[in-house]
Image 1 (cartoon, rainbow, N blue to C red):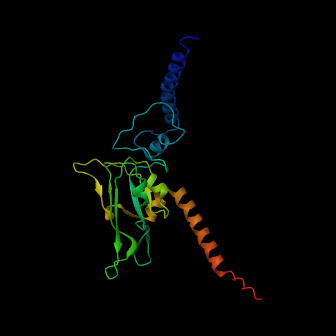
Image 2 (tube, one colour):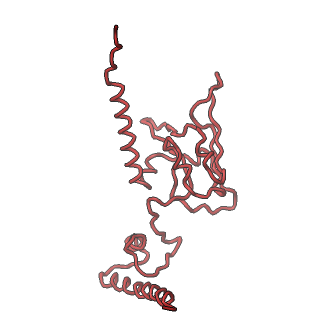
Length: 209
């Protein structure tokens, strides 16, 4: 029927409009304040949110979903005495797969032998060029680079992050992405257990004539 699509579209708009007031009334009847409260922000960030609402940014911010991605950062494991064990081996895969080519890496070299050491000496990411695609984190074979939730990068200068600015502990990653962190840790422990079992298994003796 001609005009059916317009009627359906107006119906969606009307439903969103009425749901706004119905949601407010239900919160009011429960004696709760919807706006400017932690509970209200959590509700509007959830799948149960209905209607139309305005977030009073920056006073209040919606909770970012776990899979939300913005700027990349590098992970390091925290040692017992506070040392930082950087996961990155400066293999360069992230720089190769980066579509806007905004990653630059310089590998560390042994000062005596000149041989390369699997650790970055310098690591730069131009956040103004980064398209937040997440391919660097997807292709990293060492789980050394991840996508952050921090999106407030407005500044009066160019945002080029160096190694120190990019490094964050695994505890931070576990805080913003607990599901992914727990899954990756289980997979890592399973691989280590399989490797240890293979090393402990008795080797078959050589056949004798």
